[in-house]
Length: 340
Image 1 (cartoon, rainbow, N blue to C red):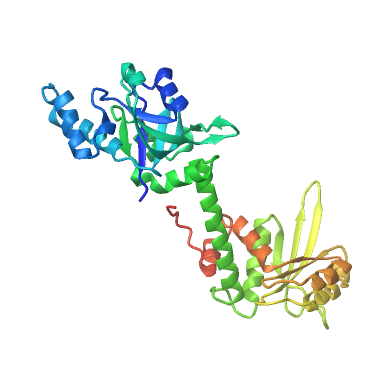
Image 2 (cartoon, one colour; image 1 turned 30 degrees about the vertical axis):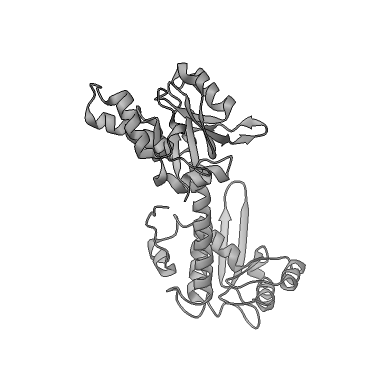
């Protein structure tokens, strides 16, 4: 099982960092004891205690914490992931097999070393700003006095850091948010298509929803009477948006379908546009189902714009904050913030 550690350069100065990065190691002190000569971490703990703390005038809990760090460093194994604080950044490394005792590093008290493989990008050491990390991990790395810390509680985040060189916590949260948003869209579309919402039956509920969405988009929209047109002509909604710069009038036919929506709805709106009152209106066909390429072609030939269920759901989600509470209840949408 992989473990996750923070190993801090002793004084976090350039000399210490040079030992780490130029030699591909992480290192700790207690250099009067050669860690590599002792296979058992508990016996190593005892040796360090005898050499450094047996007669030390320090509180017992401080000594115990330091000895825990000794054992922690000793138990690092091949494949473990390591974070090294580097000024206001971090660098990351994967532990390798070899334990090293470096006589050359004794003067800096960094003789006890573990070989690692640092991560590089474009031929340069990969340096990640601490601000890209979660607040919890940033806080843990700021704890002073710790040379070696166990970061297992941040396992998932550290795994993501190693998988993604451009990792940032905020970017990750945006990705999670997008995944959840796609789940919402998929579920909402399925519920609308299969009648699993509380919208009014007979297609009237979807007409009311589209009418409200048009109002959210800035149109003066209204449901038309069912007997407004004669013969095959039909439209459900009229919507008008006018200001000092534009005038846009739309006549909409809405179909509450589960599967494919054919061209009949398009033919109905084409006929409705022949009404003298609507001669300056654009035609729009909106369905909760899907529209084939052939039907889209027919719509284009008749200058009718179309919107399928997937696009309709996009517009619903876009206007969620503007839709009435009652409409969101009818759709089964709960707007309670969630933790990801």
